[in-house]
Amino acid sequence: MAPASHPAGLAVTPRASCQIVVLEAAAAGVPVAVVKIGDVLDLIEPEETGLLFDPADLHSVGAALAKLLANREYAEGLATQAKVRARERFHPQNIAGRHLEIYSQIASSRPSAARTPAPEVGGESLRQIHMPPSLNRRAPADVPP
Image 1 (cartoon, helix red, strand yellow):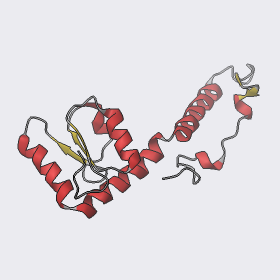
Image 2 (cartoon, one colour; image 1 turned 30 degrees about the vertical axis):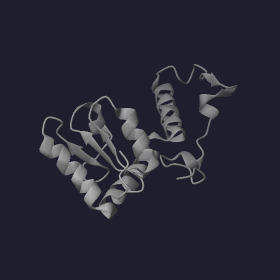
Image 3 (cartoon, rainbow, N blue to C red; image 1 turned 120 degrees about the vertical axis):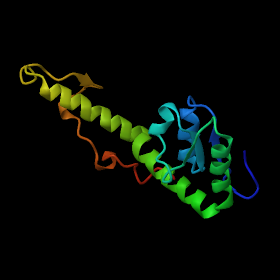
Image 4 (cartoon, rainbow, N blue to C red; image 1 turned 180 degrees about the horizontal axis):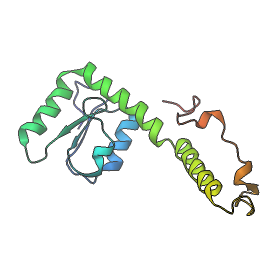
């Protein structure tokens, strides 16, 4: 749905199984309204990064849509905040960095870790891989918004 009154459009997910739609909309800076069911609740912070609605209550659906369409600045604020959070939480470099942190914690917590060589990745030991500052849970500055 892309009404003329909002240049970025808006994303509405009527099903709880539309996580990728929510993530893509957030990453693109599009305001979102999603159902109050399932895993999508982990992706949206109500009134901060999007709106939630009860799919069984037509008034709830209408109210969420009306709120986004009637107040362009509010909708853009939600979309901006959702884009920032999506980049912080789901940017591939941030996810890779978190995986390396987990692997390092597991490797260092093993009782025999001091005696057993660390697994190798691309010819380098996991203990030798150092995380660059750009992977400190924020999206790198060189990634376009």
